[in-house]
Image 1: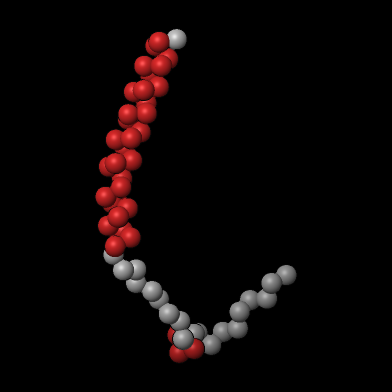
Image 2: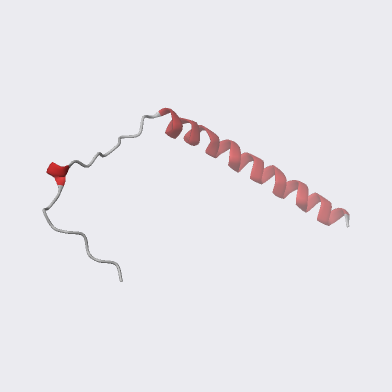
Length: 53
């Protein structure tokens, strides 16, 4: 049983290190403004949308 407990502690430590490594990338992505694409009538192709059956 001690082996299982030791293995679980190792797994938890590894997961924690992985999450800490991902956190800075996540923060940078949230800090960067997202470019937003806006569509206007001038952007259209003039085609009608396909009918949904």
